[in-house]
Length: 320
Image 1 (tube, rainbow, N blue to C red):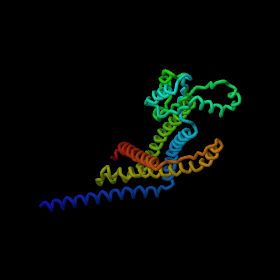
Image 2: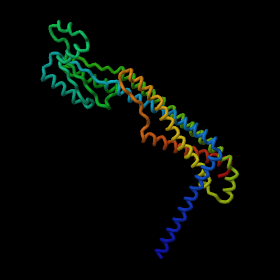
Image 3: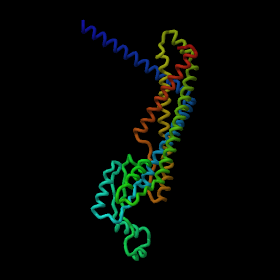
């Protein structure tokens, strides 16, 4: 008895799987047949969606490479601590140990008075004039390198206020003007990219939804007949949902190809410009995880847009 029950259960599972497989094959066959029958309109729809995906993708690539160029061309923001000239070696070591204990500090580069004089003589061009001086007028300097999570304007100013209160510190300088401007610029680019991305997501949803709506109207008589013979709502919806997935997936792949073409076209120009500034910088394209994320998001948007459009227009025409 138990063996017969298991056999019947296995047979029922096989029948269900076979039926489910045939329904999926039927839905995808309808998608490909509809694409072949309206190939020009389908291609135009895919191109429009692909361009809508390409624009925020290119914006993201520009923001990504701008950050990379900023880290390559600009130095790390740091604090320059000028020490009291009267400090002894032991007092200087004690002061540096206090500064190192701050959780935001990663490293300290110490320059003695003689080393700062040599640096000034090397870069100023006044070596002959410096030799005429009776004593070294320059103090010892400690260059404080902050940690990565502390490279923010408000945190750097807070560290500056704390260090300047220490005994033996004459002054603390923070040259963060370029850092503030760079942060504002990258934040602006990021905001623009997000805004374009949101608008493009809306555009993609509308384009896919409109194409699905037209497909429903073109096949509304067939849908009525399918309902009259007992077709379920899921069976009716499945071809349209798969059409949205197909449009989103293919369009995202085309968008990735267009993005790579854009990178290839401007890479030589950027390389030429960067060589003028005495550095070598190449444009980076999308990583595999980034490309997969774009394909996944586009496919999900295609499915959701098709689901909303199909539900809406089936209900409006009283088909579902």
